[in-house]
Structure formats: C-alpha cells, structure tokens
Image (tube, rainbow, N blue to C red; front, side, top):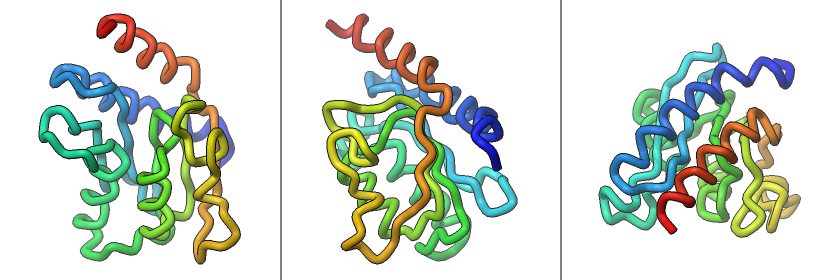
Length: 152
C-alpha cells in the first residue's frame, strides 16, 4: 500500500478513538489489519475505565487480533494507531511480530517510534516493523488537543 492507502484504516482508528473519551480516557484508537487488509482487532485506551495501566489502545487491539488469529504472532499484520506508540506499546508491537506500524500524530513526550526513542527500529532487537508516520496527523492531533483543552 502507498501512504494514501492508509487513510481509510486511520479513519477507522480515529472513529474508535472518539469513543474513548466518554469514559475519561485519552482518545487514542487502534486497528490491526490482517495481510488482506481486513480489521481483525480494534482498541481504544481503557486505562481509566478499567483501572489498567496496560490499557493502551495498541495493547487492546493486539490482544483482540491475537485472539482472532488464535496465536500471538501477528506476522503479516499492520497496526494503525492515532498516536505514536509509547515504549510499552512499541515493545508489544515488536514482540507480536507485527510487520508494519502506521501512526498519526507524533508524541514528543513519550513516543517510541522515532520521536523520543525508536524502540521499533532498534537493531539490537530480533524484529523491526516498517514504520509509516504522520498519516492524518492533523486530525489525530486535533482530537487530542480538544480532549486536553476540556480537561485542564
């Protein structure tokens, strides 16, 4: 797929993100696509709702995708997420063997896919997914900006 082809999947992730703020969670959404481009996992932040520090959208989506496939290895899959993953999520992406990470907004404070750290492309690790950054970044950033403006 070329860069523009990720817009539809990112729009799906953005739709999921909008549902997270109803429970007080930061509006981040994620979808996992199988090699054919079918969504096999979705996730939103559920840290507040579930009182779960690992309740990040990426982890929720990866768990759902692994359950759908019946295995933890997500080779051939793409994770699309509205915000650059943190170190925990970047580690989960590597460990799940995801082939490709597509994200929207950069996270200069906690991003681990190129901003603050680059866990997903660390040559010391045994798996390095392709990274496509900045897909619909303005829309992802606007959603987060609006959320934090209401919570200050």
